[in-house]
Length: 337
Image 1 (cartoon, rainbow, N blue to C red):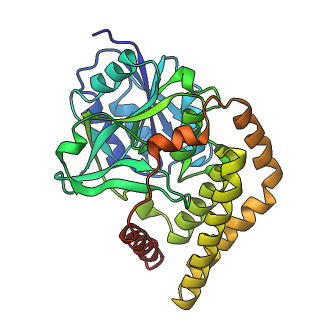
Image 2: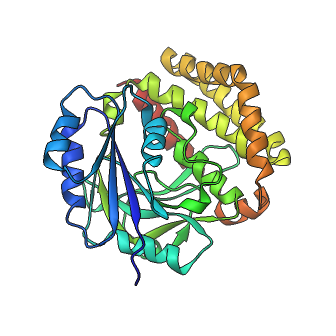
Image 3: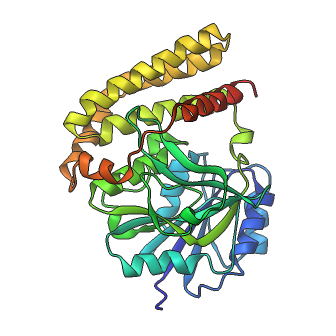
């Protein structure tokens, strides 16, 4: 096996201990050719100083403001030089040989644009933090394998509509439309990226031989639930508007907005007004930003190499109703935090 250079981007914001643990695990890997770019999003907990002291060999980029997940990773991307770029969450720990299977997939199949690791939860290493994510007719993702035990069906390479952003290897040439949308700040940015990757004619896959561990909720636990729901709904709506083909836009967007308005009513009757307000704010943001979103849509559609039907035939599945009830309970759980 050859070992092309990999640029690894890690983002930190006031999570010194998580980031130091992640970097410690990364330093032990067997892959011989990589660089680490650590972006500190204007932390005030001494993170940057501690990282610089313990890991002087990495490239430390200090942002003067909190650019969010999207903007912070975009800043780090400007410092990369390799053919392959790995986005790695700071609340992860990698295994010794996690990188080789990802790179091997890229070398063996030039149609792959993004490859995701198999991610186990750090608190319960027997459970998976999701395997693959399918698109659905509502525009909400169906996360198969979430908190499931490992199974034979998860022991092979699988195509996924959206990779889980905790650990993804990206082919640089698949970034013709850029990395993350900076207006997203946080949440759903990897889905937007993966959808654009499919549109460009590349595939997105899950690689079971690459194993990492993820501290679920480590980042979101520091954020208000209204913030999480607002950005999640805001970014999901924009992603649908930007990336659907003309026919798909005509049916998916109305279904999605109708579902969102149904959730507004549900939360009102459940006395969870923050939930309703977050969704309404997300819809209003997209109305205000319609012109900018439409400009981005034109750019994406001008580069389209594959139709929605060709994509959805591979990575769209409509889940059982129990999935939606579970998804709703998760949103409600956020609102009660």
